[in-house]
Image: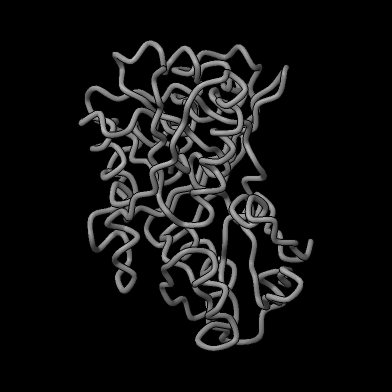
Length: 298
């Protein structure tokens, strides 16, 4: 019997995501091993990603393992994957999307595993906020020009431990805290009109080799069509947006229902954050969606 190796980052969040995939595949009575890897992005904590090579630093070791057949399945947070995919690999499964919104956390209670937060408006004057994402930096400064934004890196636990010391607050993806079982104060949640999420935020994507039909057949049963459609729309928009890089302040979120697609887009242009929202029938061709969205892009 073949033993499938799941490659993943070794952080508690990444392992929780890999465990979800493992639990599903075990129903197929197959043998599995989770192989945690320390990626370059996990090793370097003192510099923003845009200074050291971008989002690929969280995935290249996993993808190299897949290409070298040291792993058969790669589990990723979709927002950490660059849009161009390595030759020979394929994203075959998009898990059901978790809550894609950001949260502004001001306090963490480790004993109760709960976090408190507030709206951007409620922050004290000249508060210091932690985030390394240009998208979040731009939108925070758009709402509160007096804020001091300082980069912060590390896994969820590392970042939470810094609250109350160097930072008055830190912005997190709600999905990551939810998957770790951390209870979130509803006041901490930032709605889409305030902060537009990153492309793919809240979606776990599963990757394998293009020629591994056995793995692809197993994984396709996990796929969520709404998540897949949202992922393709969001990543397709980023791919077509001129001049976009890991340094760009860009957000896009597609909410897919059985009848409609609602899309939020944010982009910084000449120091200004502009946000707009469109709704389309669900069967609208992606090329038309992208044309409309790009036409509104400032």
